[in-house]
Image (tube, rainbow, N blue to C red; front, side, top):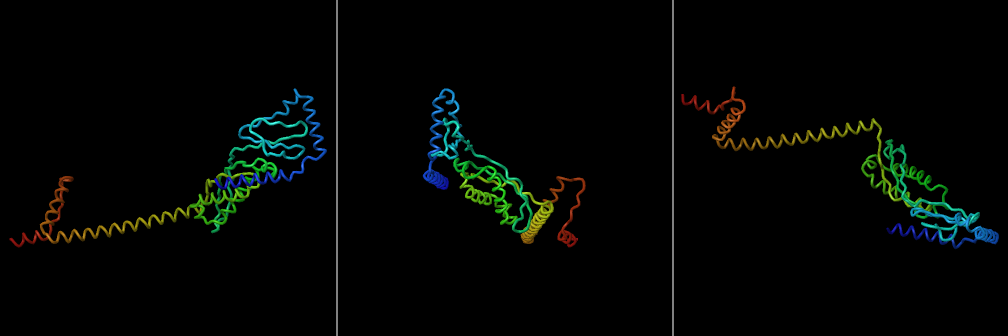
Length: 281
């Protein structure tokens, strides 16, 4: 909000200074204006329809009288009057305009060629400057956006382009806004649409990501094995302290196997039980 107010104050100051320095139409110019006014009065019923002009709510009209912009700046919206033969006017659309930045082949800071495109939103903030200071504000803004995209991304690494799109868009907006300020244009928003990488680079990045995922999977599996071995060790210590616990564990396993597959059961007997039976015999 503060930037917009400062820009508006700047544009008003420029317009007022231009108006104060305007030397006027001169004697010959005023004679022509007076003759045009008398002609309009004499042919009033007909010329009134030629002198009344209308601009819409989102438009402004810049009136040129004998080649000079009238004091007061842009006219509209609504009705305004022009003199026949001496006045001409240009309409300026004040709505927000959007356009696509064509894909640009850019060499990044780390020597990688990428294709980047984007979109720019801007509007005319000062109609007088947009008409008087530049021939075609729309075309100039489009060309400037392309060169700005190249200049900004040329100073970034590939990783920065892929991850810091918001920062890049903000930097482009600031650069464009400063450059188009003298044209009466306000750049409202810049967005990076797509970043296209070469096919070979995509394959290399995919292989790198796959290798990193496999490495993480192996580390996780190794950590799981280590935790499982620790748990088994603790269980073995508990069972070794109570021989009856081992027998109960065997019986529980036998019950589980019999419930699922009771046709054939192969169940190992502990050597301690066999030694006990042999000793009794």
